[in-house]
Image: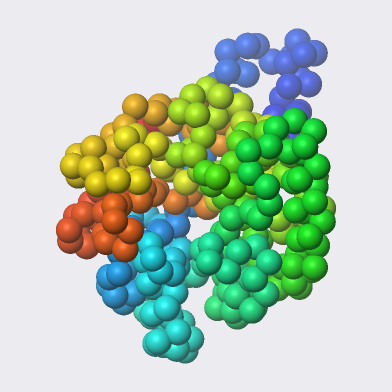
Length: 306
């Protein structure tokens, strides 16, 4: 149990015993709410195919401590790592005081990450994001059985994850086994290892802030990555840039306050990645690196003011 939860238990008992006035109890929760600090990670694909050297220099500028490397087609920074070599990459991170937070790998899938997990561990990282494998469109008992089957198939891969200290976070992605709120709950309930977790993507869920807040509370410590990302007008066709940017926090209609309150309630300590997809994939979300960084910081300002 975390120290903040210890304090909550003690103070709750004191209040029930009539020792603490309600106003002190209320002020305690105000203080703990202010203590929530997001651990930001910068998704390299926000800059399209921009050089890795240029993107790493932006990490600290958006209040992040780590980078999430994306491969083609969304970005090509994972391929750039291979081209520059591991030693040069490590020196680049050290130069800017940045760590490797994550490598995202949808192409390899959850059953193809063995070598990649070893690489993440070697480079000082501890997270990978990918999608699930299994039937789509299921509900109820059939969905729960399919999630259980997926977890069973993951066991040999989770042995590697445990040996390398890497957590595999499954994104709730459209047209996937793990897509709906129920599928996410089943994954959290049935997982056999803490190295199997969830990458929580509001974009792919019904845009109900209160409902997502409750889902976050239900999932608790099974969330490893939280994408600060909403649906807006989508990302699957060409849109005027103003409409495309509605995916970003503070631009589209989704109120992130209930989501942030829920993250505070579960004492969330995982990664937060301010995110969107441009159309077509592989281009920066805005024309210049400085514009991309400015837009991420605008979204971060919105989140911090909540």
